[in-house]
Amino acid sequence: MAFDYILFDLDGTLTDPYEGITKSVQYALASFGIDERNQDILRSFIGPPLRTSFMVNYGFDREKAEQAVLKYRERYIPIGVYENRVIDGVPETLEKLRSHGKKLYLSTSKPLDTATEIMRHFDLEKYFDFLGGADFSFGRDEKHQVIEYVFEHCNITDRDKTVIVGDRKHDIIGGKMCGIKSIGVLCGYGDKAEFEQAGADFIADDFPGICNFIL
Image (cartoon, rainbow, N blue to C red; front, side, top):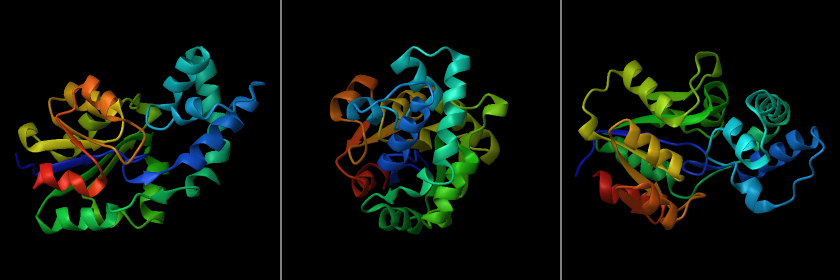
């Protein structure tokens, strides 16, 4: 099946943000007297909305979780955002998709201003037709909400020709909620079992492998 409109997650899909995110999570938790060193727990923050991760992992209520997010951003915005790297094969693959006439869109649960800075800093913005991200002031932080925002802003109506590429179950589930296909990529922080359980339509071993399902 060929797709014309390709939506991409950011963290773990286009870039590997491990250092910046985990250190910023530790910084935020320290303000609540929590010294977190479990790498599996810290790694779980990559992908889902931050507020959700603080609530799930530490039992924070919504207000406390939002305070944690603010503390996180104190470190992440000036420092952590640049503790990042582009995943192997991403620029070449995006260029290839563009050369085949595909329309590319960012669809991330990361705040839009931060996501835009990352895309510009790592010279990825030039490949994309539109950048979609979270905006807490509009209550837009879940993946399906961001996807719908991209659809509305870009007037995308043919969902049969649309697919989302991501590295966690939240990308797959968000795609299903919006009635589109999904590709799970193993270059990030999800594994095959997670994708299968979430119902991914396709699974790619690495980022360039997504071309096997898109072209």
